Amino acid sequence: EGQLVESGGGLVKPGGSLRLSCATSGFTFSSAWMSWVRQAPGKGLEWVGLIKSKTHGGTIDYAAPVKGRFTISRDDSKSTVFLQMNSLKTEDTAMYYCTGHGKFLFARDYRGQGTLVTVSS
Amino acid sequence: DIQMIQSPSSLSASVGDRVTITCQASQDIRKSLSWYQQKPGKAPRLLIYDASNLEAGVPSRFSGSGSGTDFTCIISSLQPEDIATYYCQQYENLPPTFGPGTKVDVK
Image (cartoon, rainbow over all chains, first blue to last red; front, side, top):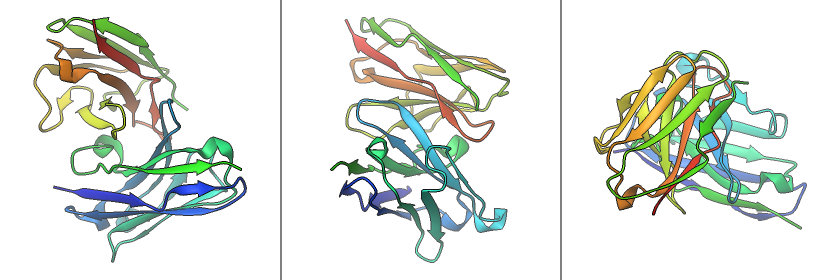
């Protein structure tokens, strides 16, 4: 069974930066399209972005609210996906989950516990 | 972006009741729809994908149907462990978009 472990969350001031990591195991990471999804406290789910596998060009797409500030990358040798967050705003405060894409979003092998990011002065 | 309308926003039902949640997409998404269950403090869990396919390990009291713009998730006999918020999500087009959620509790 797949395992995903997100890390790197914490408290950061507005305008600051944070880098989240998602270490995976139990599935063929190099073939997987990986997504980040966030959930602000008490709110619904919001897709953040996607990185495709290198065999599909490694294309990256972002949600409009984070485009230009967030960067997704992957290290297939370490089965890890990253989310670099710059110019953070208070509205970026949320639990951040890494997961699969499409019908694999939050599927059994593609579900971690999330990491909490709090942006506050 | 495709908008997802979900109803009701909340419901209260008795154990054993049949519960129906609906989701409407703002444009044709064929069958590219998933349903998720989320309990407080936990990550969402995939229940149904491709509108009607049950994820492995999900109880058979959950079912999904629909195509195009109108979709339904049914819990045939509500159990206490089904207390959660349920979300629909389309993955036909980027960005993937979620419905606002339906909070289900027991009377």
